[in-house]
Image 1 (cartoon, each protein chain N blue to C red):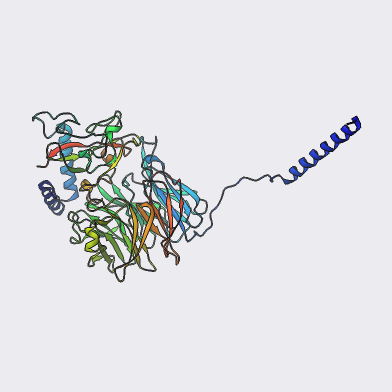
Image 2 (image 1 turned 90 degrees about the horizontal axis):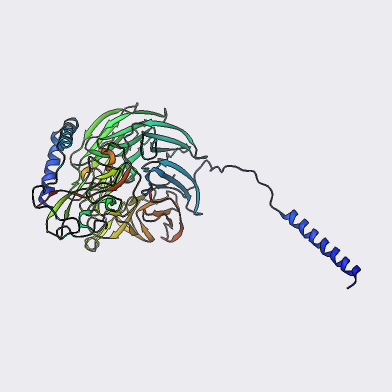
Length: 173
Length: 386
């Protein structure tokens, strides 16, 4: 079932594609990324009651398993199995700056969350806990909804893909 | 026994031993010169390249050449980081391979090249350096293609800005880059034209001049709904028509018009309402194949319902494109994510999956399983018949 955020994003993306040239769009994204670098990205829920650690009552499941709720649209090796965690990269790797997002339902609190699947880059494949789930995954011509790209393209260390995280970046409802 | 008799018996035994040794020496295998095997100039009708994108070891892409009749591996090409697929021209003689390398394996300076191999020695004849931008993604046939006259090689880039690299195969030179912002992959439509699929459901139609530079870029109207029922990007071409299956099993024929334009023809359903209700869907990495002479379309199918568009399947269904009727069902011995069909009169069907490193071979006419070829890399992806 479509959620309101998807609808909003669809209208925004279609409108943007019609109106905005690539140069202007990249300029805007560049400004956004510069802003992101200047003001470190903060969890959307910051300021609210701190969320219990992964595996707690409101975040049920094991992040080292493919079935964990945040992995609903992931495709790759789980960083939780590779020396990192569900939101941080393993030592010595770099988090990709751009990535794809999914909308996953948390059975612990009943909310739908926007999950960012940042790849961790700069080493060979971790090779552990391979997981591919495709809820709301779209083909390669809709890049930011596609888990088939190697998202290390946005990193400084090149495209060597190591593993994927599943970070909460928003609440869908 | 006397001493004399013992001595005679000993002499006889020594003679027998000497004779046996002499016989053995006469029967020994001859010494052998070393050498390197060559392939015939013409590929076999049932050969297939199995491209291994090697997902557990991305720096080590490779392609295995296999003879489907004997099940023998014939040779291998070593093809670098995040490998998609070889591009094999019909005219023969050479193979093009878009490749990426890092100077320190997984780090250091990135270099992208098109390596040109000869088909007899499988040796690198040379290379064309291209911008270090080729898309790193799940392997897709539309990541690298030749124009219809095989003059220009077109390679999809994603940095995440989208563009297409053009290489002149005759001059063996990089020509330039064509901006395809908002649109992905490359589908040739003629000697000097191609299209890309765009996120808003339109196509970007590009024509090239004789030098391989963009002569025109036209965006069509929206031809499909990428959000409601997306086309998979894994299309196959039947003459002047590209065929794409949607997530929900609608076949979209996109007909090439004169001058390289595109006209969307009415879609038709691969599955009946009853089959859809039973959750039959297409799925996989290279889930469609075509036998051009018979006009038959092959698709990997499975029962899984929505959002299983990448799932492998244990069945291959066959449709007659003229009548749009399903004419055959082939039960696969093992689940497959990629299929390919040889184009001769007695075709073979090949199937493989990234979940194993085995190639399965079937006789198309009878649907009978013939043989498996084991040990082909790590995660075999795209199948290409030379």
